[in-house]
Length: 309
Image 1 (cartoon, rainbow, N blue to C red):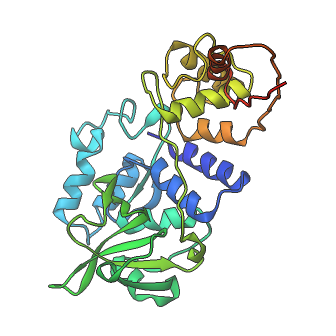
Image 2: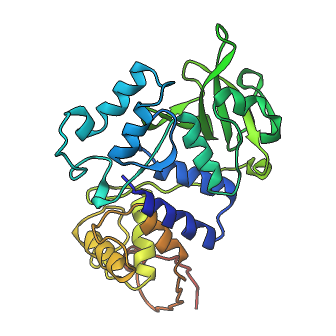
């Protein structure tokens, strides 16, 4: 889990490398996965004092009070001597942020300078100054970064809100920040925030977190980037398997770039790899077999061109 400090650093890095608003909103939402829900909160740092403040507000329901206490080891255990040490929401002795559903959405768009108005889901929906367009999901929602709502007909109110990151995938805060789909029961309306109109079209590929033991195309991409930056992955090269050699290279890269050297490739490590200038070399080797050439490309990355003499 990323801390608030790490997410803030990531957002700064993403802006520096020129990511679009849509890309930043998507990446930020993914970077905040598993952050805790606290009714009424809008991005406050997670502390026992802040949790106490929110559960003592008169409008909070008993169910939400129980939820806030459940995810705080000090409040849950009624132990005044308990600290945040060892708590899931205190990663690497750094704090995460707490939000309710609308607070989380506001924080995601605030990352790109869009300030959504309204104290709750219904008031956000009704304030047309927030939106460039809105409508029913059932009538066809654009494949774009936007807000999605759950409408409760019996009350005439919007009951929940999330961020649609494209292709029917939603990230929302309910208990914790989690992923869902527009096909899940209840999602009814969408609204595109003003300033996000350019978010339509092909959506960005947000790279997954990688660790030792993973395999696949993203591991190959990681290995290729490491090799291009001069890190030794011999004798295996970019083979798509995250083994000891790749693990050692990732840790060295992290140490040299001021990152936590844990060998886990999260968004901060990907960002550092993407922002560092790549170096490419052209090498001509005569009289080698196809098999040998294939092994060279596998080991060092890049492409191969066959030329006849």
